[in-house]
Image (cartoon, rainbow, N blue to C red; front, side, top):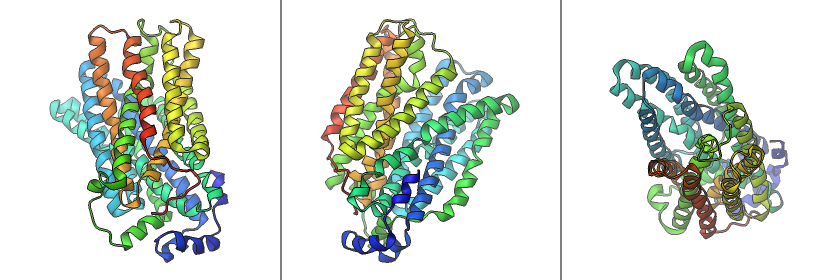
Length: 449
């Protein structure tokens, strides 16, 4: 994240910022390029550790299910309820952050996810002892762990506002998306760390130890949090004593269009994400799918996460040049085309299928780095975190809808390939087209309100 060295000279920025923003002069003057660099690194590690805990549950659920004697249907039901709880928590975080501030929101998200990780070990043991009550406790605890998932929307709002101050010069504003894409790359890095921790810790202390260890990185974030400074835009908003409900305002005025259009696009896209990114191995290995012996977890992990990292950086870079809305649309439309070609490719052809699968993931996952930063550009400061959290929660709603539709389709006798096209490719195509209805934002402009 070395590009942060090129932030504006505070002495030069302070004079021009006074004419462009209502931020309190003292606050804006205190935010130095070094502060922005530190905040960028802290947000990167906060997101990496949040993802680390978030993906652990999905990775370890089969082991937990086997230990407590759940049938596959029970395991799926628990995961569905956890996903619903995650959506509610992610939705609730935004209005809170628009009231208490971005800095506190980051710390609450990370610490809350860490506590939930510790309690997951306790809840898992309770399932084996008290049955149904333990299951309810586990669902509640893992829903609270949705604070980790919500952390990405808080990060996006916070860094968008810091970068607006540090990159007020239009020539330098074009680097914001690339830098944010490096922060968002904490997703594949956190996923790899989670897989590595399971490999190392599971033989020693089982699934419970993995969750206990996942809580410790939060200590680092809490300590590092003392160097985080609140964004000048939020401070200006707070000093202005602006009243109103962020949740209600997210559905009024200029925020309404962004909330509805981007939110529905995100939801539709996540319908496809579940099919190709989360259930991808089932599709690839099913005889009525692509009939590929793609059961090597390490190969899948390397392909998917390397593709995700490259996709984040590429789409972050491209968004700085042609605009984030256009980048998202192009990426998701090409994603739909790549996965459609994969489904039409001869079954069993490992090289062709994996190449098209990788291309699909590149264009599916990569645009999220542009999307999350685009959220911040699309909302005023008073609704920025709330709007972002509504959109973020929509992803989990899309996952629930997709899971239901896939189960229904396969139960009705559809093949995996047919289900993947109608429930995966079509919603992804639609999300790429729908996002074009969002308000376009010139990547050279910097929003100060």
